[in-house]
View 1: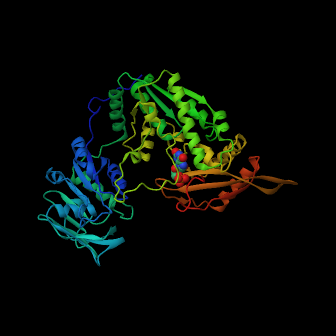
View 2: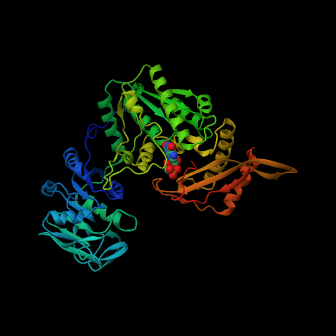
View 3: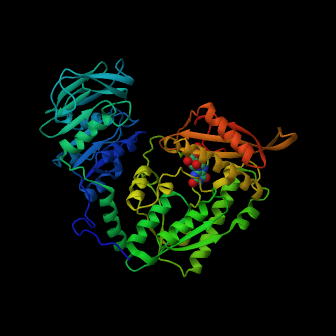
Length: 528
Ligand code: XMP
């Protein structure tokens, strides 16, 4: 059974805004703010902006910030034709500076007017960008981070707000609908920044703000049908949100042409494997091959203690099992993956070299190349929270959609030292008690990730009249927005005491519980 699509939206491109990336650390936040306003947006590096413009036919353009300086020879520029397209443009920081420089103004490195951090701007004039938000004479908090500044405006531009360090904190050419802001509206430290970006998208560009997950779902289903035709698709399920949402969406599009393979490595949390099987097979009626390869994985992990060696073995074995299963179901034409937007965006680097590998997260990297299959990646344009919204739209249960991220190598990287069946079972029980208490306290959704770690040390305890000599369990809970940085979740001590008591009482093999107080950096979220 495949769903009927409303004809008027099937396969239609969205009204969109193109974000030209000059390498700022926070360009993704611009895309998020635009999407929060109900408008579809895509990011293109400055040197690929021309092609993105032709493909998207955007109704507005936003130029990002950059670590570069407009005053340096060879620094990046906006394709000049964008200024002649007759659509609104918002330049942020470097974006404002290059716009001004390219349209006949000038920019100087600022000796004394560098501004970093919180600043206040004063509104000096009217602008469509401020309509319904900021009025003349008002002061507003913004976040600045700039050395250079515009020192002469191009013809047609006027200053509409000033700050101590930037006489042109906001400039505009109301006729051409070009706006430049020296500050960063995309970061949360500019309290009205999201509203300002929404004003640009909705009011200035005149977009309806009707980009919804229902529309995305219908558009994607049409695209998947067109791409796949009567071909066959195979999809690996991990138990995580991304692959689950991708699979359900693809199934809605092409029904039984999809086969899912769930490589069950035995390193999942309590009850998780059963949930995957019953949800996909029984609830959605999706063809699912469940391969139980716990023994294969545990045998291979015998004696392995190095975290990267664990990851390598698990990634490699996963691919081998998956390939084998794909052959057994008679092959497929397409491989489906739950790739998300942050993995797709080409990062613009001004420093050259690759960044240091802290941990290799690409569990199944190389799978598409090895299997020589075309890819179906219906979530490529979405951020994680948007995937969750889509999951809800598709009727996936909350316990699945709202689930904390779980690493591909599973419990293996939460058991420092050797991974054994006994240790996995002990950890699964402790983790289940911890998560149960977190859910009961209503804290699950306030936490990015919470889990137990089983340490390879034993400590002495006393229970009843006897001496115990058992494992130590560490509890971890962090808040984060993207997993790149993280703060420790501040549980109260009564909560932690309750969890510790339950774990020691209910989980044979653990007699001591500690709470990990390390933020990231300097720690990482996982212990390995
Ligand atoms: P770290 O430990 O690097 O974790 O601070 C950041 C986020 O990534 C997850 N993580 C992994 N995910 N394969 C994955 O798919 C891995 O090997 C891996 N290692 C860490 C971690 O759970 C957190 O969400």
